[in-house]
Image (cartoon, rainbow, N blue to C red; front, side, top):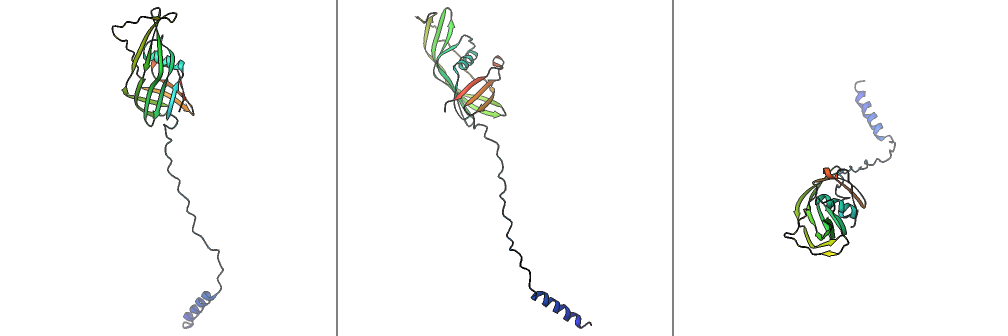
Length: 196
């Protein structure tokens, strides 16, 4: 029996090799599932980017605070803000502010330009002023009825225009709301509308 065992194993191997094999469905390689791309943080400047105009009422209120002159009003023109990636410019367009003075008013044409960098941190905008070029020209004195008066200055009055270092903001589409984090403006919302 010992001599037949190797012969029997060989015969079984030949039969197994010659027997019909079941045909299996061709297998394909597993499909390559693309890996998800790393998610990037949303662009914090996306909504801010562009040119914005401050409402006349809000502009008068802001300038009254900035100049420490509560009687300041705006006769015409506008205040605007422009945001690009990490920068801002705060400027005026044909702005004529008016302040109450004695029994009348003083008007001037204000050319305001403040620029700097801005950083977004959650719902805060942090402003760092890097340049300023503000000029008041075309001074006029008016009586209470709006009639011109002679205007004589020993020195041209100076009105300081700066910007608060930070504001809480909300932005959606064409509306931007700023609440400057300074005590005298606490709780006052400044509304801007997108112009570009």
